[in-house]
Amino acid sequence: MDSLSELINLLDNTDKKLFRQYLQRKNKRNDVKNLQLLDLIETDDINGLNKLYKSNKNNDAYHALRKRLQDNLLLFLSQKTFESKHSETYDALRLVVVGRFLLENDVVKVAFKCLDKAERLAEQLEQFNLLNEIMLLKLQYAHMPGAENLEALTGRFQQNQLHMQREAKLNMAYAFLRLELQEIHLKGKIVNLTSLMITTVRKYKISLPDLMTYKSIYQILFIANEYAAIQQNYGLIERYIHLTNQFMQGQAHKTQSYLFYHNSILYFLANFHLRQKSFTESASYLKEMMALMETDSRYYTLFYFRFQLLAALNLFFTGFAEDAISLLQDSLSNTKHAAKPEDIEDLRICLTMFLALCNDRGSLKQLSLLTRTDAWYEKRMGMLWTIRKNLMEILVHAQFSNIELAMSRLNSFRRRYKKYLLKTSEERVLLFLRLVEKYLLKPDVVFETAYRKAVLNQLGRVENNDIFTLSFIAWLIARWEKKTAYKVVLTLMQDGSYMQGK
Image (cartoon, rainbow, N blue to C red; front, side):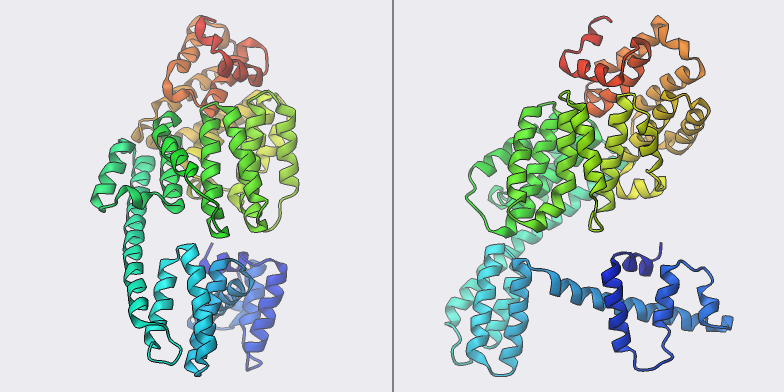
């Protein structure tokens, strides 16, 4: 999809009507074709160029028209965003814009009041770049009557410069760690997270106090959570969870601006305990998260589906499958335009897994609704998510006797991901795939001792102790146990009895 189409897809029906009105007001001539182009893009008309221009020589005019439409759309989106945002950051920005206008028009007393209020807000929000702009503006007009003491203003300005340098170092470190994660994820680079963190902190000369902010803790947890997911071992990041708990205990009530980071931190903590099978602790963090979400409708909307996902997983893996399934079904039926596609896909694949583990044919319908391409899933959801989705697709079709389709999916999966899995040292996935293939070719193989032993041996690996990986192994065990994979996975998590000689 081209960039112009992507921008148009950000608009809902109301926004599209407003954008059309915006273009109509800007159009000074009757022969402007921007509204026609907008119609063609919305209807995905591949013959759009011919309808706009009769001659192929007008190719340049067509591209110029697209560029003008994109520029207008960007301007419209910037104005819409500025007008619709009600956060404290945008309040401060508005005050700066007004303050600058008033100073330029010699309304000095009111201007400085606006800038003083903007500075207080920016300081509360730790928006150091915005503070820098405010104080530079104050310095520019420090000669005007009513301006504050220059020495005091200069002192604050210099202190803010230090804060900006600290934040810049943290952002550079975060960017470096994100790139390292990509190397681990896509190229199988072997990295010890603790060593990587220490090396990064030293490289960018970051002190421990620098790390003790909501934003820094959020960034650390994001990196740690991604690393644990790639390694399939959340025990590797316990020290960062401990660091987070220490930080959170020492925090007093913060302003609304911290809600994003605070909610994100609680989400990561709830997810960590879920993946460690500490369901009570996970539920406790979710309860705290919901209480915080309810204090601001913006963050309630932003985190709602992520919260629902973790809540459903907690219910499901503690024996309340029906409640978990109902929760996800209700969430999916109440999705709105503002919902992120990634959140919807997460809920959908989770519901598919729940239904399949409970031997419910409804999983086939949910699977059919996961309609995006593997390339889209790899880019937006990640390689691990996409691989799981493809494996689940094979199992669900096999479960309900679509053997030929399951074999076709299995062969496609092997062609697309074998090289990647070998490169990232994930041979265990290929081993699991061979076990599935043996079952598809000869279902009675599940009653052979050697086959059962090969399946049960998967349970002895630390990286296979994750709730999702256990669910895949439980599916194979269920073939000979003649019970649902859900009952098997609950047993695996509770006492590991299948490892004790079954």
